[in-house]
Amino acid sequence: KNEVEQSPQNLTAQEGEFITINCSYSVGISALHWLQQHPGGGIVSLFMLSSGKKKHGRLIATINIQEKHSSLHITASHPRDSAVYICAVPTANFGNEKLTFGTGTRLTIIP
Amino acid sequence: DAGITQSPRHKVTETGTPVTLRCHQTENHRYMYWYRQDPGHGLRLIHYSYGVKDTDKGEVSDGYSVSRSKTEDFLLTLESATSSQTSVYFCAISPISSSYNSPLHFGNGTRLTVT
Image (cartoon, rainbow over all chains, first blue to last red; front, side, top):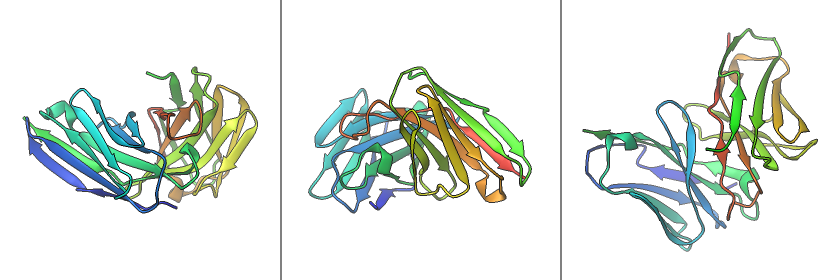
């Protein structure tokens, strides 16, 4: 099983700040998921990435396969970005059926 | 948004009673998953399905059974509910299994309380 650690567990920032959330895992993987869980509980897939960097709007995800580490960045943060951000990685040689999820980073953006 | 609906959204039941949660999708995706989410834990897989009548256990499958008689429906049954099964349950779907190019789409969750 892949072990997943996210940091920080909680993060409070002012609107407009640049946000970084980290995810480290123990076993080499083919790809990594970043998810967003809204305050109402719904979960949305943000990114899947297997190398380099992906960008969607103000969100940027990077991954370093050699270091077994991924980061999620939010530029020009906004209160609507307040959510729990979760990373998930597969057990080696498996896909979505063997995902290990981090416990999440709770982000609060203050206006 | 992917068409995935969970029912009921909330359920309160007594210990020892059977409970069935339903996940319905309109995306014709092959893979369907049931997870539970508890404080201090990441999402944990209960069971998953890789096709009609094809299911397999996840890491926390004890006390749960599943059935998939149609592509669009995946049922999770608690045969005899216990307080330890109080949780929020999420259904998810994906077209294929590989994480490389197969995003997960989640339902809105079912909050189950066992008293």
